[in-house]
Image 1 (tube, rainbow, N blue to C red):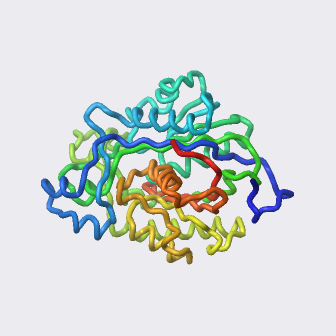
Image 2 (image 1 turned 135 degrees about the vertical axis):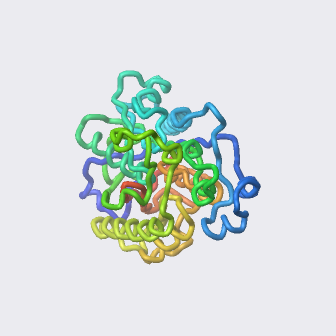
Length: 343
C-alpha cells in the first residue's frame, strides 16, 4: 500500500514504523482523590486541563520497569524479537548515572546493542524518533526500538496543585525498520528546535552540576519539577504551531490534508489552540489526556495507541506529530499511518 499523495518515483530510503506498544501502571488516580489533599476540585482540574484521571506507579516501580513492558509489547506488535539499537526518551531516568536504556535493553534480552537515553522532556519522543531514523538512514542500524517512558509521580511536589494534578506515569514504544518512503509508516520528515534562553520555564532546579558545584547544601524543594504555567502555555502553542507549519510546508501537505493531529498531551486547550492555528479541525486532534494525564515523553505513543485501538486512527491516514517541552525544546514529525496493531 502506498501513499497516493506521494508518487512511487519519489521513493527514497526511510525509517518505517512497524510496531507499537504501551504500558500504564495499574494504579488510577482520579481528580477526586487528589482533591482530598490539595486545594482543588474535579471541576477545577477538568476545566483548566481536560484531565480526569492519570496513572501513578506504586513504590519500588521505576521508569525502566515501564519501558521494559512497553518495549516488549512493541516488539511483539512488530513480530520481531531483536533490534540493532534502543533509544529511550525520558526525563525521569532510574539513576542520574548510568543511562536507563542499557538496563532496559538487557532486560529485553537485547544485550550488546547500543542503547542510550535522550533528554528533551515532553519533546523527547519526537527527538528520539528523529535520532533513531538517523541511525537507520546512516546505515548504523536496520531496526531500532524507540521508547518514551516516565514516572513523573517521582519528581512532583505532592503539595503543588499546579503540577501534581497534571502529570501521569506511563510508557509507549515503537519499532522502526529500514524501508522506503512510499511505504505506510515511513517517517517522511522532521522539524526540531530549541531555545535555551528560556530553560527556567520547565525545570528541576537541583540535583545537577549547576547546583552541586555551587558548594551549597541541597535544598529539598529544588528536587521537584517546576513549571511556569502561563508562559509555558503560550510557548507551547507558538512553538508546536510554527514547527508543524514548517514541516507541512516542507512536505507540501496542506493543513486540510492532515487526517490526524497527534500533539503532546499537555492540556486540551493547548491541543485545540494548535489545531486552530494550523487550520486543522479540532475533531482531528487526538486527545487521550483525559484518561492518562500529561505523560511527557510517553504521551505521543500512548495517544497513537489509544486512537488506533478506538478506530480514530486508520491505515492510510496522514498523521502529524508535534511536541513541546523543557529546554525549551520542540519538534514535529509526519507519516502515513500503517496497518499496525498496538499491543
